[in-house]
Image (cartoon, rainbow, N blue to C red; front, side, top):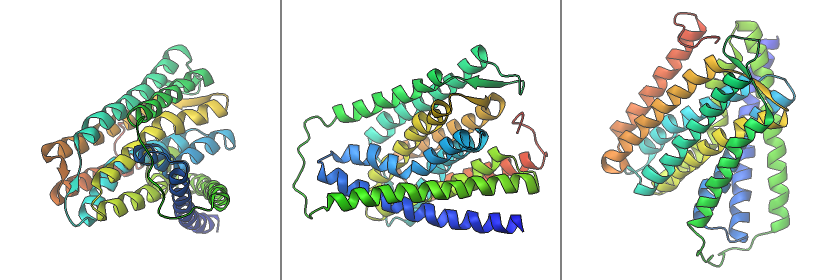
Length: 337
């Protein structure tokens, strides 16, 4: 009965996360326009934070309330893999033309994104060297101050985005905005997402007990895909309107936020967290491979064709097969999973 209930709760949580995230993004967009924020800030910062709030919530709640870091970090890294492989692939296939990019996306955003991956790996590595934990051979108990380093780097990312638009002059809005109502909807959407995330954590706990599925694997696959639905919706809409740069910018901005804020926030707010380095590094390594695949295909003609989109989706299918084989103990490339 508990498995059936967990299945229902997970499905309902997915629907609630979708609706709550859509409300969050709409309210954020209107408020950004009202306060005259530049489009690049709206896309790569405000919209990215809004669509990444589910990942932030599960990373924080899984550590602070449920005392487990594997589910949260698994959901964040799995969501990042989903974002760079599935979202561009689906967006390109559903768009009327190829998904266009430009040099700013391929070089500037990609550079900072790879820096985000490297900085999080550096935090985990410093933790293993200076703060080992006895729970596993490659485990580390990362202190809050070390978790603050990626968050500080995200502050630099926001500053760079702002500096690029310092001379921006906001255009008059074409519609009036009820500021009090939008702030109210923003608060309501945050509560909906938080409630849905609790449902995901409950489902992960039940399925891990019933079927022996590690929480990290559940987070890397099912929870990651569910929490990435808002990003998918935003990017597909932008791609269908011919705004491929906006679509890709949302993906990269979300991933930068996930890696530099969502994961470290759980560590900081919980007063520290135990990380299994043997699980984290192979997953981050695959994220690097997925990112290289995306930018290699984008760089060819600064666009993503249908054939290249299929390649990205095939790579993600291979990732899912790998996780299934790891769970079934057929392969053991990830120590401790």
